Every structure is written in structure tokens, then in C-alpha cells.
Length: 322
Image 1 (cartoon, helix red, strand yellow):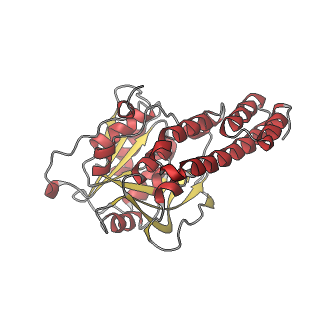
Image 2 (spheres, helix red, strand yellow):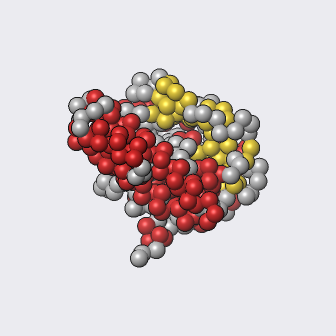
Image 3 (tube, helix red, strand yellow):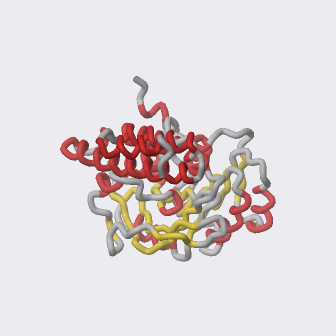
């Protein structure tokens, strides 16, 4: 069996002395998201404290569109740009973002997502409150292709502060989207990058891994926006239930990090939750006429949970039910 470390990029420490480093590195991975990149950059530049305090860099994974033109027009020299010599894939591109970062705190902001006013000040206040805090995140909203807010994530706790029982809470469900969380760079240096065994749910595994070693700060104000659209990596992975398969794999990978006495109950709760979501998506896909994808979700539901209720719903989907 190979070590988990073999699947996670090593993030080397920054060579510069602390006095020369910016507080923030806003690293923006992109792949064919030029349509939305202008909104992403504008949301960051509206909060820009200047290059001495914030590195802003787009790292493009060999897109077919033209992010460089947008960066030049909107960034006006303020935004750095690095283009991969070839398409390396999402996980390797994230690793490049982390390795190229120079700030004390890293914000990975996908090139189709946005942050709201006050995000960086709020996350800096949380991360600087205690060196034991490894990451800080906020409440977030889903937005559609046009940038319209669809719904808000429920509050974790009503007031700002350290999230109680963060490890078991975060392992029970995917509660964090990447634009909502900022991580201390030394945490990446200690724990490594995202796990390359996961093509989806790599972020969930990462947040659980961080929570197993560090305190997590939370701010209930909605200050990040996660975009859902048909061309996103998540949307493409939904078609064959890949997102559910890799969610299941993520659960297997991080299960040993959970307290032994709670491992079974937390895992069981998460599996039941994702079985229900697989059934829900299977029904929706049947309604949309995509029988193959619907059956794939029914099979994943049975991989998550084997109870009679799940079997009954899965068979209903197999027979074309909604």
C-alpha cells in the first residue's frame, strides 16, 4: 500500500524573509472560465490593499479561451499571470497555485467564483487571532451563471469564533466551498496539497485533514459566492456520478483521522446523507431523460448505504421512476 503522502504535492516553505512577504496570496486557478474571470478579479481588486500586502495571481491550466486578455484589461499590471505549458489537470494546477504563493495566508479562488466586500479583513482577523487556527471560512451563497444568488448556506454557529467539534462536524458533510476558506500557508507546508487520488471531493478531504490538526475559525457573515453552471468541473462529474464516487473515496481516505470512538457513527451519518443525495439526483436525471446517469447515481446510493429503503428507491430509479 502506498503512503498517502505520495499522492499529495509537497509545498515548500517560502524563501523570502517574513518582512518581505505579503500577508495574502490570492491564487486563482482557471480552466476555460474566461467568461466569469472578470467578475472574479473585480471582486478581489475591490478589496485590494496593495501589492505589499496581497499577491494576486491567475494560474491557468492551458485553457482554450483567452484569460490573458481579461487579466490585462482588468488587472492593468496588478494581477500576475502564469500559464501551464500544457493541461496538467485540476489537482496539479492547484499544487502550482500553492507552490507559487508567497503570502502568509492563501486564498484559492476558482476563476468562476467571487468574494464579497470585507472577506479578506474578516478572514485575516480570524487567522491572526490565534496561531493554533489553521484555516478560517465564512458562510457562503450559491450563484448561477448570471451571478444571481440562489441560496445561502445555513449558519454553522451564530457568532464569529472557533468552530466547535470542527473535525467531526466537517467530516459529517461537505460544509465548505473553496472560495469561502483561507488557509495559513504553513498548514499547506505541513500537510501537503490536495490528494491526487480524488478528481472530485478533494477539497472536502483537505478541510477534514486540516481540522484533524488545527483549530478552524468561522464567520457567519455570507462573504463568498460559489457559482454553479453546466461547464464546471463539478457539473461534468455529475453526469456519470463521478462526484459521488470520489465523495465515497474521500470518506475512506479521511476516516482514520476521526476519533476512534466516533468514527463509525460519523461515517454512517455521512454515508446515509450522500445516499439520499444520490437518490435525489438519480430521480432528477430520470426526469431529464438521462437514464444512464440516473442508474449510475442509484448504484452509488447503494455503495453509500445498503438498507432496504435505499434499495427500494434505487430499484425505482432503475425502473425509470422519478
